[in-house]
Length: 163
Image (cartoon, rainbow, N blue to C red):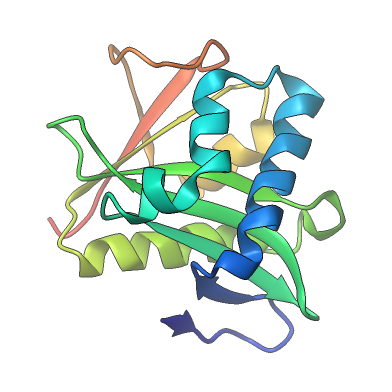
């Protein structure tokens, strides 16, 4: 499935194994720049087919001029309060501020809504100010009290859809 967008903006496409390296590389780049790579990161980045796709999720790539400039995924949630979790969002530094992250998240949310999702969860860190602003612009609200497998998580958010 492909989502057509404005030709001046990246095209958002769903998972294709040819984008797997970019999915990992873009995520490793931003995580290593701010935090440390954790075992939970590698589980998803090294095995996206098994960890995300085969469990009912989807991976999205933003393609601009035949290059992957951003990625994110919707992971089918194991938590009973949420349907999906928005995970592994990364945008290449050269594409940041150009709307790729917004398009990725917007298309991922539309995809989850089409699957019948009503609540989408995410985890982040307040050190990532532009990301937090993006999530708020998309309608995510801060919540508290859920344990995370990641040391770097200091904010959790939820988006209610299909209400």
